[in-house]
Amino acid sequence: MCTNATKTAASLMAAIEPTLKSLLTFTNLLNTPQGQAAIAAYDAALAAIQAWKSGTTAQNVLQLIGDFQTVFNVLPLPSTVITLTNIILAGIETVIGVLMANSPAPVAANESLTPASAEETQAMYQAHVVADTTAAVQMLVPGFKRSIWHSPASQYQQAWDAAVETGGFPPTLKV
Image (cartoon, rainbow, N blue to C red; front, side, top):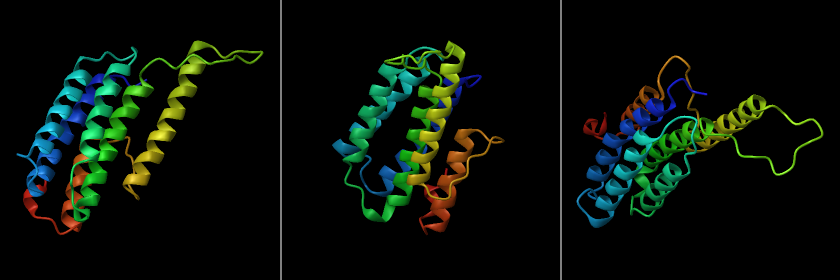
């Protein structure tokens, strides 16, 4: 488990906020009903993450993140910002992965003849979540390389700024 999963997930989610607002401003959606709905759903998810405790189920938090994803995915964003959109979605996938990997492993429907210990089950579950999260992020942001030396929030911001720069977007979109 992450030594401070709540802080990790909350700081990454907080790093997403300025990029979300920049994207909505750039696409003239910030002050529309859809943009305001996205911000409200984001705020609800962030508050839930900040209140969550590592080692407990994250089902309610995951539902609120899912609500944000639903609202975000129906925003009328132009295809010209797909790279930036995918970075936001990859950040959300990472938050989900942190929450899931630091929640109790689901109970297996059937046990083998030699069941694994609770610690082994949790470790296997975490490895599975990390692999799935890594694959989801790679699908959204091909070429992204995770670093153990930098926080997820820092890596997110670097990926965003690099995409803004290489995509020819205005520097005001950088965080």
